[in-house]
Image (cartoon, rainbow, N blue to C red; front, side):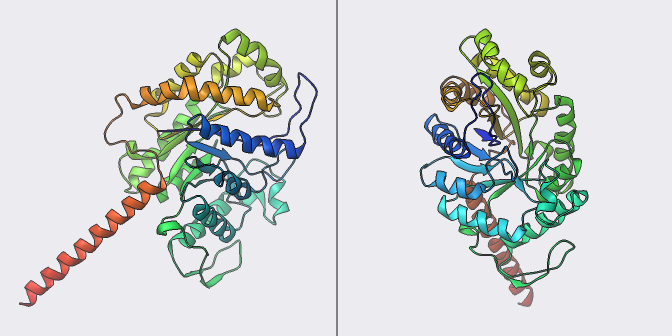
Length: 379
């Protein structure tokens, strides 16, 4: 199982000091957080994609390429790549290039985003969000798997004899997650292609996400990719920790109360009761995270949101120390216990290359056997 962090890259005033970081400070903080994630033994760093204030990560592959050059083991991902407003050709090329630069330590999470004005900025209509997501990904899927593509659809100019460059590393495209907080159509899309489904369950009660994940698992099996238990699931979560839970609540409360994503709504206590947000001791984070398996079944990736709501970099780095030293080692051990043999491991480039080579050898063996059978019949 993979553990990591994801960032939305918000530039938010620290409510305890009144200070607002510059965009430069926020960008460099995000890269420092990614390097710290590898240092403390996490597996994944993921960044969102936004094109509007108060967010800074408008070019995820640029940031991830910088991080790739300074890390050795960390898997680099997006927590949203806007499949609706990005050209699929550009996504294919950007992430294949990043794959090569990072020696395969790359995957991508497709999403529609939740900022309506972005659509017209890129010449699209938000009312076509789902059809755009479906059509654009259908093209992207082919661009990574076919050397020459002829294609025509509703939302972009046709392609004739087009080859996306560079080709995916080792002939294996980046693993794709389809992220959603509300749309069953996206769960269906992930199931159809046999891709991963990431339920970013940070805002709504677990029952909502149980329905989405159950739909994905059922349809994954329907399309012949394996059993429902073999579907590849990722989950989001939010944490704030101190050694003493009372200290954590006291310190985090002003950030929660003023956060642009959930401030001025339910109380901190109500939110922690109804959603995966955990504010407390490392043990409380461990205990609550372990309940996710009870709710959603065995899954492959757990990402935590740490750097938001104006929290200063020093505090976020302290959170990472607690996560890497006290929380994740225990979670690794506990999640490994009683894990059914049929549940797949989290996707990595090396494992997917090995699987592709095994499949190719099997197909070649089948062709050889068929050839021998034809020869026997001819005799």
